Length: 159
Length: 424
Image 1 (tube, rainbow over the protein chains, first blue to last red):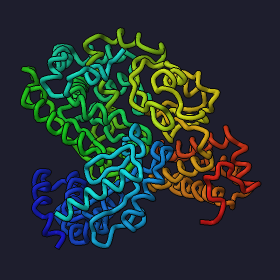
Image 2 (cartoon, chains in turn yellow, purple; image 1 turned 90 degrees about the vertical axis):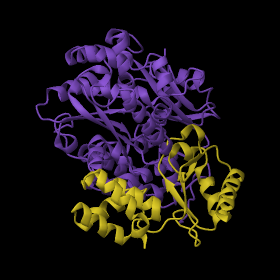
Image 3 (cartoon, each protein chain N blue to C red; image 1 turned 60 degrees about the vertical axis):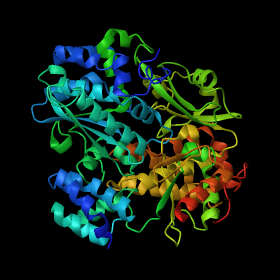
Image 4 (tube, each protein chain N blue to C red; image 1 turned 135 degrees about the vertical axis):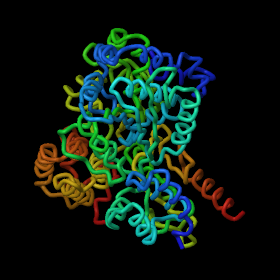
């Protein structure tokens, strides 16, 4: 299933790189963006196309924090927990998100809509505490702001 | 004096190729293409520019090594994997003045004899990726990249490559492995990338900020640049102020400004009562509140027992517990250790455990000595900077605030009420 969803993109990337190993990370990015994770099927497919042992593909897929072997939510909330944001209260951000979504950090909601991912510095230290939802940046967060942001995404999902 | 932010801070400047060219952009490349690579190297050496990513290696020397390497092809790689907690300067350049970087990389390519460049950009920098993608296209359209640049016989292309969330990939050899499609683990040095780099070919690897200085050095000369800021480490530096400070942000200032001036004059002062400062991110050592007169350049901070690193200046006020912060720093390194070498993989784990115990009233009298020994071993034997620097913040917190650690260990007391002081 998951391979179907991203196969076209993977083929384009692979063709652009003449099947070289350098295309592995771009392929893994595409798989995560299209299917929310890197599945067993995708690992086998890439191993074959790139002429690599499966373990090499698996090791890259499991090494980087932006790749996930388990299905992520449609909206990935990356909360910075590094020192600059921690000094400004990233703990409270995590708590507010956990309360709002009724999951703990690192988990995905049962409806697969949201994942809370504590991450290292996002380079938004002047807007600490900060987080990203997918590609959007949110700074100077408070519990109230977080409620609003989550509600915006819920409304988007409902449409 | 602005070298890097001179365009960005101008009203109405939008970072497009048209606005870049109207501010004199790509003139440096034009001039460079008429010079010999040796002339460019000599200007760079005269400028005394050193790497702004943290290691402070002389840029002119690095380029010369790559130029003199016999192997071909050669590569230019820009390290845009900004990841040191507290650092957000490269994002500013990438999103707002991408052509400055493109021009600098083309000059680097011409100087060392490379025709292919890569920008390795953090996976989480989505906007910067889009901005750079468009900027590279525009540069090609305007013949500032591609074949026979600006009518010369020099050709140079740049490919963008996204990282995927790994702090260690900011280390140059781990970055190269990642660029080759592997997991990012550091290589043994030497050989250095200028001899054996990307695909084992000679590679110049520079930080975004380092490269961004190059066009102005070409335009105004190395002597001009060497007269800005500290005499032994000249130029400007982008200081990233964050934490408990009233006006956090990126400030471009001549090197050699004091920490006090940076915080008070530019950062609007401390938010609350000052306790400590990390001048170079979590890889650097804490400075105490009485060390604010230190000059913010590489040699001065080293003398003060810390380091400038990427100039991620994090201000800490007295509402924070140093044991808690030491714990947080070691948690970061434990999470980000690539696992290749034992001292770092195991050391970061043990340090984290000990600090967690301390914060949960399970600290032991021998912990401090044990952590000190661990710090020495990790510094001496880790493969790359990550493990070598992993205990800097925690170790200096213990040195500068011994009584706080003492109270946690013997009295099982966190005076600020931050550490749980019970098993969680």
